[in-house]
Image (cartoon, one colour):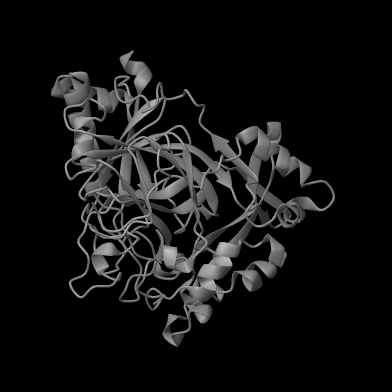
Length: 466
């Protein structure tokens, strides 16, 4: 099955056509729950070739799987829908050796219909038609796959207080990928499937979370905890009484044919640009649980790891490349956590979460080929047309005890070391000069503060090395 995703001009036209008197929600109802309404696409030649350009302008077995159509070209698009509840993992990542849902050759282009967890979680009633209906969305404007997953997911018993929130689609088996290789993930487009998203803040999570012992984290007082301690209803054991806060956020047209997310405030509104990207892009890294099944702390979808996963780097949208060290035959690529927009740090806990139709090109890079930086064989690494993005994680193997507050300093130091290694290995810069350059002209940005394992990424402008 193939699908050509709508490009940005087409989706912008749909967005404007659906506005007028009745607004965006009427457009969603008229077009159907699965229609793409707005997104961005990378130009076809933006990365320099079929495999994309890399640092320095480089050229371009896991069990039973559903194979691509015989004789299909590597660049033919394949659609991976999320409709069936037994085709996704809710809160957990695929393990090494997991059964794939799709098999493709290296260089293939895959379009994935991703589903946001917001609006379907237990603290929101696990009924997206009812929850979004409270915010003015008609039943016809709620995605059918979101409804199906909320009502019918039964691959394991959901535990709201323990399991990750993310709906994880995949894995995709990429032919030729072996441990020690790199999977190059190029994001070609990210299109809104619905004209609304949600930002949530939950007790015990986020950058201002109350600690497990009931106190305030270092640096703030108990009165500065968010959400406020007085609203914490976790002792009830009923997620709908926990006092978590979810802010419904419509998408509306912005200046110059763009789109903005909007939030109501006293006396007016807040409007900010949309910049869609996938928060989660990963490959299998950890073995399956010894007892079988899908549930294991090492597979929790929340903390990012050396396999990528919930990396939450906002620059990794359309036109970007993400390099991932392969640990499993076929790589077993998976994705989830679609974002309409995110500020660096993701302070409150979530980004502006909303379902996306995202198109990727998946290419295997062998050691010594020059198709991926050497660093990417041991650590996730990002790239845009303008910059290289060395990444640092506070705990790259992922922590399993569910606590918030790992060391941001550790993540920052690792990002700096990875930046140094990249400049030395790929561009031949002497290490003391590279260290001085990073201080003078590169930036180190907090990726996110809230995923248990926290992240920092460097931004090294390519123009400095022309």
